[in-house]
Image (cartoon, rainbow, N blue to C red):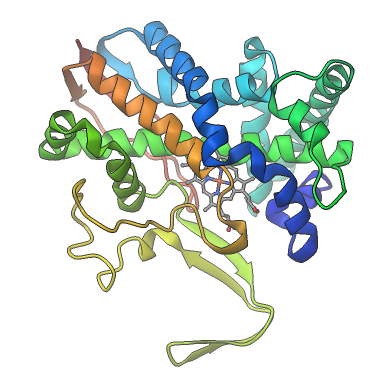
Length: 324
Ligand code: HEM
């Protein structure tokens, strides 16, 4: 909980503006364009390792490895440590789970301390010899004449891992499942690869990786004749808004050619996801390369197993038969 107090997600007003201003340059369209070749290399390598055949689990052998490998690579952390980083990230994920029991909280606490010590060690190395990576850039970043403290860098690097892991895994997993369940749409994407960016927005709308965000109202809010009093805890259902029939025609239909798709899956307002362009770049490279390599992708027979969380919507595994 101590670490979360320095997360930009948990700050408001000036404190949030400062943290966000310091980190924003790392995630602009230009910054993401510059690192795209590196992400592409990682995606190719992971797909070489995955291979093909019957019953390949696209979550375990691809989707779950992309964001953590990319973030270790960009962050300046050794890629060999990615399993360790994923273990800590998974444990820390329970910080937003109000039902976490005592044992889970202990594991989470240990993970927070170990992960912080690990990042601190790399911070010292980068201070001595800066490189072209996120930790070095955060060390050098200045906004309104101010710099980040070490604790803030450590907390927000953890936040980037957590914010970017499960969410991107689920964009890839939910997106591939939706395409496999709609072979006509998959065919359209194969025939018109230029549709990829629109397709990703539509897949984000159709099956959002984060289904809800929460807020506490700071004043009375009048919403369509109902007053939500100040101090209320409000759950905002992004997944429902994405399928609002007043906004989208036939909202339950997946339509990669739909126009004016602007999903709320990355939230909105000052806390709009800082990693949205990074996540989309990863998904674009994965979908494009998967379809290029494999002319035939079929769901392996069996049940589709979803994870049992309410706020995060994603698959436990996604078994497919892959042939080139
Ligand atoms: C498909 C993938 C992703 C989805 C669906 C997603 C979703 C979201 C949502 C809904 C929010 C707003 C939360 C709120 O308003 O309470 C958010 C914020 C955030 N996300 Fe993402 N995210 C994704 C990828 C990433 C990546 C790759 C990163 C890594 C850098 C990241 C880092 C963050 C951070 C740091 C915030 C807090 C921003 C702030 O408070 O100003 N996310 N994300």
